[in-house]
Image (cartoon, rainbow, N blue to C red; front, side):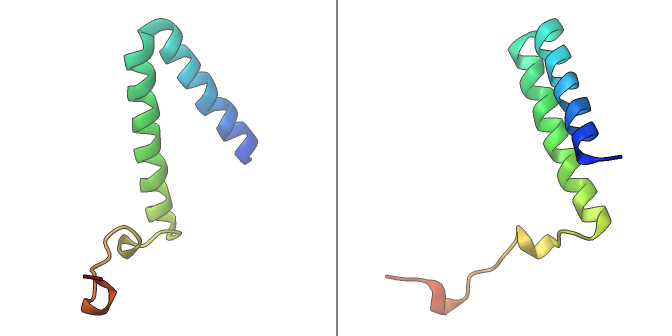
Length: 63
């Protein structure tokens, strides 16, 4: 499935949620879509948990 088709489906889902459920439903569908996108990237191996969870070393702090 091409990225254009995925984008079309996502846009239609957000449109239906916004039309039938209001702005709150639109935000819920958008947030869950983002979570699903990140989870899919993790499962495909494109993202690593360390990309989001980086510890600071002592040399990085300014003070």
